[in-house]
Image 1: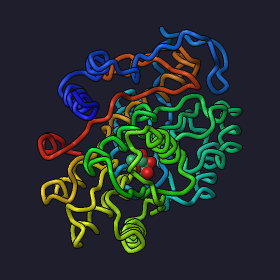
Image 2: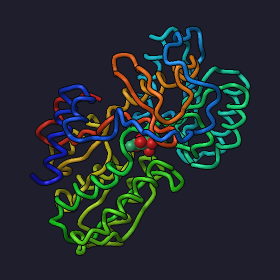
Image 3: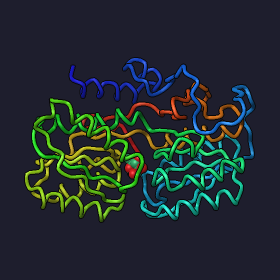
Length: 361
Ligand code: RAM
């Protein structure tokens, strides 16, 4: 069985069974990924008490990369639901542009001044928030990053959507299969500083080093800044500059939607292949009209929920962010903190014409 079809089977399994079961069956290492060595993640203080009672009456602040991005609306709604279920209060603050790192810094400072108990942050930039986040931690606030990380010593834990390596490599695999392992390709990313996209792109480049991609050439990485119009224009620009382009990977929900919109109204529809990370609701019509064959994503609401549950577990002293610590995230089951304080949500799902109607987010 080819890797892509193995992944599709695993994704389907993950969609219909518990993620833990799917991860085991597929040899996944993304969940319950216990690391035996006792390396420290972030700057955990004290000792975790897994049996400590879950604290109520906390305030948990969510700070996404961008508040008006539907992906974060869904993610943060998942966070809000979990925070409220756990008997605590939720608030959300954040910039409306994905390239406003100064804005993110001031929102971190606002949450610190308000003395929230914990904050969940999706970082626009790996380093820019560090000083502010360290200040928050030293004033007793638990800091979780989700979706896009800062540096490990600037937060207690990072709730990752999936294995970054897996995401980067599989996007190349999906596209290469669609273009018959031959031709020029480009990447349409989000902001140039985005930690998550840059990490995935690093693994895409690694994957492309495999001799099986010797006829595939990455000609350009363009940045649409998670802005619909800029992403649309960048796609148009790519096609103008590289008329022989065979495919585009867009590892951002805003980018892939805008690229699909451009391609579907152009002579390139169905000819220039497009894959990456999108929501099934955004991409359904482009899969049905033949613009897109397959793309992937995790459930953003589950990512937000896990970030919220991690924040509350940290505030309750059930975990400190150290590698090897385990906690129960409600109905989502048990999670173990991996190297550098990373907690992986699970495996992403690959969506195509066959399964897309089974998803609604
Ligand atoms: C966009 C954002 C987000 C990323 C998704 C895939 O919504 O850039 O950070 O995780 O796409």
